[in-house]
Length: 390
Length: 217
Image 1: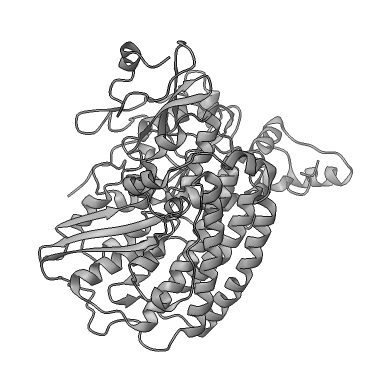
Image 2: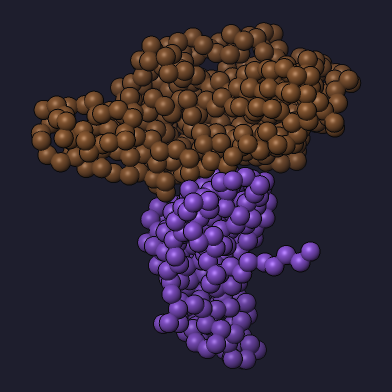
């Protein structure tokens, strides 16, 4: 039967009435998953309406980690916001730094020296590798592979975090990029250490793939699960591995030509079905492509300055105007929109977070699946709550 | 039993002569008190709650992974349910929307229960303190045993907090004036859950655990 008016009345305040037909006229079970729930990757809540075990309605509830990031951005100075961007998507602090630096550089019309561009590419691709490795580990954790794949992923992640720590002084909150360059120069010893780590990544990915990619449980629970159609993904503004898994060829590194990505040979992995397995596979293949970029960048990195000599960090006041800087963060398009009124802090500081936008189609992917599969579909979106709620 | 070697560390508040104890240990006689044995058992299997709030949660996960290996301290069993957990690691920013749930989860844990406030946000609001939506420290609502500063604290710092907590558990006595709260039949194990008020959480702090500092200008 379809939903009658009286039944829909039970869901008053939900964004739209239930769209799935239930099997019988029995009562629906409302389950509140989160904010404390082992599968929700942080403090996120899903109000799920269940018919038996089947999801007929899912309403995401945001805001449990709303840390007033944008409000702070409008009172703090431009440089003061750099460490705050670390805490947006706390897996990928360096790509957040880059997106913010790019926006401010556009606003102030600053150029970035060549060596700094190479360092940025190297750090961003290392960030992408560790983010995707951790995302795959957490997805396997959500599938019930308790611990082991995550241990493999974090073993590799620690090696990359060691590199970050020796360069920037911090494992996670790097605060490394500056407007018009980078904070400290990389040494030859650091580059050699990075080359060594990058050389070990393909072996690690092959190992992870041998354990997971053809695993029967993973195939059974991921293939055909949470299918996202390309037109819906484009209409909803989904970006990153989520969009590419649906088969849409859209990668800002290729489309936007930001930084120096034009100089590197790499491919954009695309999925076909848009299901959880394709998202997993796109991430695995992206790690391989990141390794290719890293190998080229580590070979070609030139000598030179790392800061624009005209760049001014203290008393930084860009001319009135607006700018939008965006990069391909590991989770999708990360953009910073800044309006300057000529003062020391932005008049408006707005973030376009990939995690939040990718999460908006969660209900469309979950409807009709079992509640246990919601956990898997949610895990495959790869979100970080710091970025969703900001 | 394996505690003979470390018994000198264990007997923090026992009245047994340590030298006599060691001599007897050499003869194969193990002397202890119920208190020591009880505390040794408890401190060697602290089960934390699988409860991540923000950035620090990632470092908490990293601590349990192969490199740092929290299992060495008997605390690798992260339980998703507060009913099965002994320790709550408040790992990250507590917002005003989340604070009632954190207190509720603490109330649901079985005694004896401990709290580690991990990171600057959990201690004081950290870098987000000036904002309108961030709680200025979880110790306003629940008693915190160990504070670790850092943004986020390194895994080594979390392990240091664990060792500090283990020392604290070792020093707890079953009877007497300084016995822990949960041995007192009169004391409450539940703390009032704050409600969202007009401007702030109501009440804005719990007077049992938080004394509002007086600012002298």
